[in-house]
Image (cartoon, rainbow, N blue to C red; front, side, top):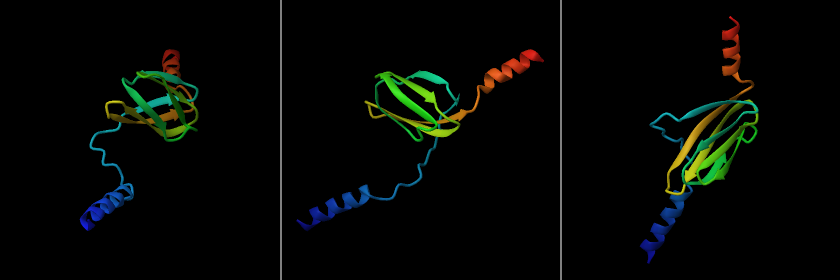
Length: 111
């Protein structure tokens, strides 16, 4: 019976190991928004949503296959999406003060 206790205690010890830095082999997708912008995008089979900083962005499920995200303040945050089939996504979101694309378009038209 002692070996069973050892295996169980090893599982508990592993569950409480310090969190290591994620080894992302692939580039993390990035989105750029501006303060006040909202964006709707597909997320098929969505189960859960989390954001790193609600001061920068907030996000909600519209249904089980769409997410709406709001740019609340200047900064960078992370959006995590978990899907019912076990997939998950991590997206880096940068929120700028103004709509720089629109401003660049207006300056270009002026020149």
